[in-house]
Length: 234
Image 1: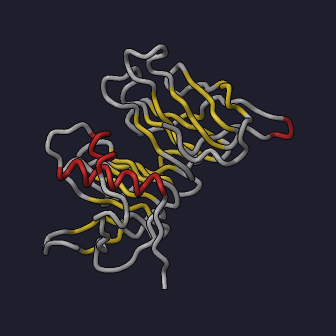
Image 2: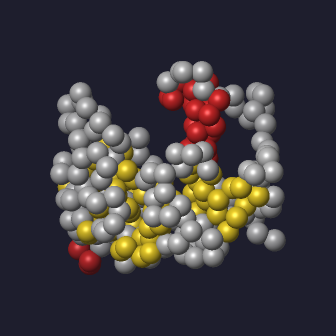
């Protein structure tokens, strides 16, 4: 029997998306903060017709829920109503993350590569061999370097300036013995901040920063502060 599991980042994304779906015009952060805690009115319902092992979850613009799984990408079919039916796309096996980039474009990490679909997830093409086992991130609209897509791995970061049609390996700090910094998660500093557009990445060696849209990263004050435990930055 396959065990259901969900990363903390994926759980937060789903909770926030469900809050937005219910939304009454409040700011996303406020909605997320207002969700009750388990035991305080918050209940769980099974989504889909069977358990699946999901490494990441994301909603496309049309409200379709996608799951990254070692089995391949799943999407939730709600034709017959909730809880819906999980529909499996056999390939590729997505061990990392899934990221929608528009109505028909999705990007996924396989554990060793990055794949992209431009037909709503029906077919997938490998666009980069590497940087494929951790987070995917798109710089938000209105930010410097908006639309840049970044992908992380334990010892690598890759970036795309063409909507994930291709990726280039970023320059990251290195250590003796061939060890180099990678990334598990990313965040951008917003317009109006002291360093608008600066991208922070957390991962193998702590926090690194980029001021050129993810092309090069340098050490921060938290570089090497933590080893191999940087899972999320915000």
